[in-house]
Amino acid sequence: MKSLKTLLDQLDYVCEQGSLDRQVSAVVYDSRKVGEGCLFLCIEGANFDGHTAAAEAVEKGAGVLVVYKEIALPKETGVTVIRVADTRYAMAFIAAAWFDHPARKLTTIGITGTKGKTTTTYLVKSILENAGRKVGLVGTIEEIIGEEHIHAANTTPESYVLQEYFHRMVEAGLDTVVMEVSSQALMLHRTQGFIFDFGIFTNLEADHIGPHEHSSFEDYLHCKGLLFKQCRVGIVNRDDPHWQQVVQGHTCALETYGFMEGADLVAKDLVFTNRQGQLGVQFNVLEASTGETMEAYIDMPGRFSVYNALTAIAICRHFGVPKEAVKGALLGAKVRGRIEMVKVSDEYTLLIDYAHNAMALESLLSTLKEYEHGRLVCVFGCGGNRSRDRRFEMGEVSGRLADFTIITSDNPRFEEPEAIVADIVTGIQRTQGAYVTVIDRKEAIAYAIDHAQPGDIIVLAGKGHEDYQEIRGVKYHMDDRELVESVMEERGISF
Image (cartoon, rainbow, N blue to C red; front, side, top):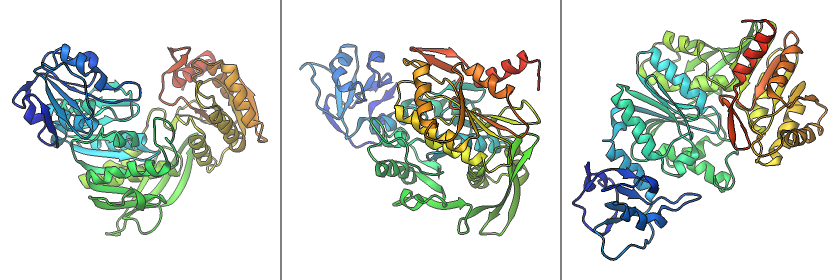
């Protein structure tokens, strides 16, 4: 039980009905979970408006309603009605108070940007744990609380769920949390109710613009910038052309990193390496203020991997992590489904990546082309019940950048896989790219392995960390790693 006044302490509000002198048994934003004496937040979503359930919530015993619109209630009720300007914003502060402000007991690190968030969170976690910190993680793939791994529904969960995770981290004895902060989360106030110790910006590209997301690129940019009005120290990629717009009006101390001179932390002298099929990058890190340098190596390919590593280094230097601990953590870094190399041969490289749109696929393939290699082979499909333009575009990208494309199935959902593949073919035929179609994903992977040549780089794109294939509303277990393992076992090859 918590007093209502305690829950509302950091909010501007008007008590339109009832008394503030009451106890609250639970905080609820799902009308199906309303119980006796609870506080019910009327949240307006894409498909349901909680204000329409206000009367029902009172009938179920809710003691407090938090609203921002007019609601219809019976005349004689003992319910307290609190009006706020935005119930989503209010929920973040009420949830923080309900769980006794757990973020104040953690060092909080929030990472935003179009790309790089997931990989960087794992790099930061690895480095800080090497230095003895106890680190929780919130992100696209999962939430990690000690030994517990929770499948993630959203990149950044609803504010109530986020505060609950923070509370559980404190209870588990953790001292730090690193999390992905999506633009949607910032727009919907999911990360309000506390101040980040560190806020990080990786990069910005035109993405997540459309219905139920951002109305324009300007809106997308604005939402990313909100993080720098909600953190103590901001760390930003100075190479990104939008960085100054993103931090405009910031209220935090500001630091920069990048490849170009002028940043506080600079990566230089990049050397792309291929060690028996294992792609990586060797580089030096210069701290501009002191002139000190550090040699580093990351077992992931490409310039964007160096950016991710540099971001992690920029954060972790605030924790006094020894250089050797940083170097050791980077060397062993591996993130599920993000340019994840699966060792199958010394003769060629096979990797799995989540690239599932044209922008991500172009970035991935362009990066891999910087390595000395035989052929660049791309295995991918597209999801059903999504824009057909994505299929045409991804087909064009692979046809233009890959030496050979194997078009297969992804998540067909309620469409026929053959129809999706046909759309991808339409796109690839706009190029001179060689291709073959193999509908069954395991057979497509087998085809890539059976026809591999020395020096090849084979990319299994689109599924990444996902361990299912969605067909006609049912998610069947399917994991690219397991498919590769099965193909190798059937051929009597083990690595």
